[in-house]
Structure formats: structure tokens, C-alpha cells
Length: 113
Length: 116
Picture 1 (spheres, helix red, strand yellow):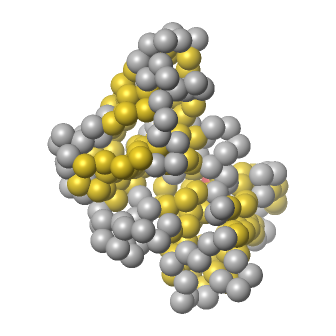
Picture 2: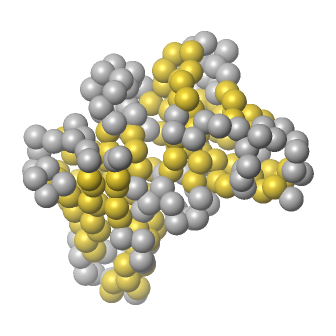
């Protein structure tokens, strides 16, 4: 069956450093992958999308990579700030009609001042 | 303001009762989704609808029901048949239902359901 793994342990980093979050998947060949941010008690908010034929995508301080051979996506936040503290979810396309997604469990990021 | 609204934010239910969670969107999106989120777990798909008057079961539909009588509304009923209904429920919508579409999903603020 399809499986998505994100590190369930919280990632603690110092302000100004680069945070790197990992999303691994098995039994999947997603056409694209998305990353979302979720704050406590709120709905996720879309951040970035990367397609299977793209190696890297950037948006301001965010960078996503997609390695279909390793079946892995890395999500980077450079010059991290305490305001970046949140849970980050990766989501993979299901391949059927429409924007159907399967979500990982998320990784909580804590940026300390 | 365009967006998705869910109500209520908190809901308490006694065992054996059915409850209905509201989800409304004014984004003119065709597709709508219901997810359930449990602590430390990802979002799990309950039901989805790609067009008015049509909906499909997701991965964990047992004990739930939905309707899609209007484009902007997609209410979810948690029935007494759902064995462990305490969870955070999220509604989402997206604009494109074509095969291969890759648009993002827009989420509502969620409803936290607690069974007493």
C-alpha cells in the first residue's frame, strides 16, 4: 500500500539557521508533491508545489526538492525565524481525477530565538 | 472575503447521537473534501465531491455521510456508527477536477469534535 513518512519527532533549530524537513514515500509514483503549513488548531495552508519532472522549486526563503529515484522530497527554510514554527505537511498526488492528495503525518518545526 | 468557513469550531456530542458539521465556500470551487486529523497523524480523506449532486467515499468513509446539493456547501454528518469520532475535522476545496490537475487545496479552520 502507499505510504508517506515524515519525521514525527519535532525539529528544533536556532533562529537564522536552515531547517530541512524530509518526506519519504513508498509504493508511489506521484505526478506532483505539495507542502503545507499548519498552525495549531487551524487548517493547513498551501506553500509550494513541485512536479515529477522538476528537481527544485523556490519561493522566497523556501526551497523544495523532489527526487523520484530516492522517492524523497526535502523542504528547506533558510534564515529561519520563530514565526516559521509550525507543523509542515507533505502531500502527494493520487493520480486520479482532480486534486486528490494523500497527506503525510507532518513534522513539527520549532525555531528558537 | 473569499474562503471556506466551518462551523461550529468546537462540538460536543454524546455517544449515540448524530451530528452535522457545516462547510461553506465562496471560492466557486467545484471540488470539496472532508478530512479527519488525529494527533500525530496525517489528514485522512473521508469523502470528496467533484461536482454538485455527486460525491465519493474516501479512505475512511464508514460511519460518515455527506451531501452536495449546492456548489458552495458540503456538510458532513458523523453518525452513531462511527466508533471513534473524536477528532479534528477539516473541510477543503479546490478549483480543478480535471485529470492531472495540480491546484492546491484550500482549507477551512476546522471543527474539533469531542464525544462525551
